[in-house]
Image (cartoon, rainbow, N blue to C red; front, top):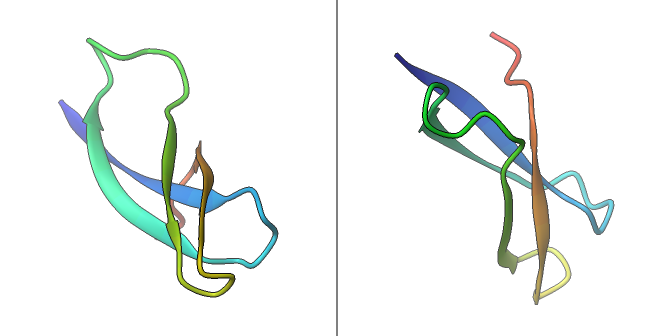
Length: 52
């Protein structure tokens, strides 16, 4: 039921986090503000597909 996703930085640095989410409860794409260590700022991270 839970699917692995990639949260990719909108700053264009290529940095990403991996996490999982419940696809039945949260059908929309996830957007989270997290820390990007490459530019040392908090930026928005958006959900992308995780390639296996």
